[in-house]
Amino acid sequence: MTLENQIVLITGGSRGIGRAIALRLARERPAHIVIGYCMNHQAARQTVADVESLGVSASAISTDVGNSDLLRELFDRVRQRWGRLDVFISNAARTTFRPAMELNVRNWQRIMDMNARAFLLGAQMAATIMRDNGGGRIIGLSSLGARSYAPGYAGLGAAKAVMESLTRYLAVELAPWGINVNVVCGGFIDTDSMRLAPQYKQLTEYITSRTPAQRLGQPEDLAGVVAFLCSPDSDWIRGQTIIADGGFSLIM
Image (cartoon, rainbow, N blue to C red):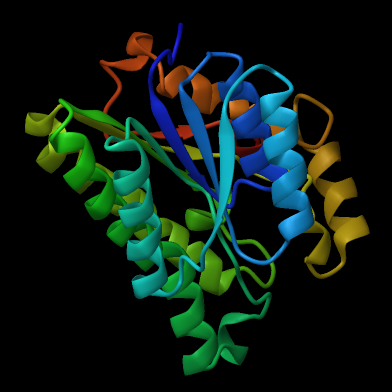
């Protein structure tokens, strides 16, 4: 597998899952990896440096995927700078951990803007660039909260469910342009954002105890799946939600 001569854009690419994806895809020798990030300049610079240490060109662009104007500016800069886009990884996410009855309109709108709307608009903008270059790959990141209950996860769970549904529609509608769309559902991954969850310690103990793999998922576990979906070997997989959760969802 190789991404030689390809341009890759990863939103939320400076830390956690996004960073792991950037480092994994760098092993496939793309022409350039663009790290989209929001506020942590130091983390973005470090990820760029780590990608470049693997011999791959990289850069970081600050954006807010929940702001449609700034998101459009990100894609405009990619088009202007490189003239093409081959792989778009929609990874940036943000949430407020609250029960459904405690979500207000402001919370709800921000979560939807940062996740569901950002995925839709990002896919539209990416597809417009990819169409002119003969196709590409669009991959979203979801979680088990899209289909099963998780404490305090109502807003993000609903937004991720929207992403998974959109993936099926986009996969059909973008196929004539040579664009393949899938989403990776990672279960419970040990990231900074997960550590903000209510009762984190008790939650991780519970997850580990009922996961056949007997551990928490790590960002690198998802990065390998994403790398496969970027490869020609995955061409027959379209519009799918690939669950990579160590077997957690198999246990009743």
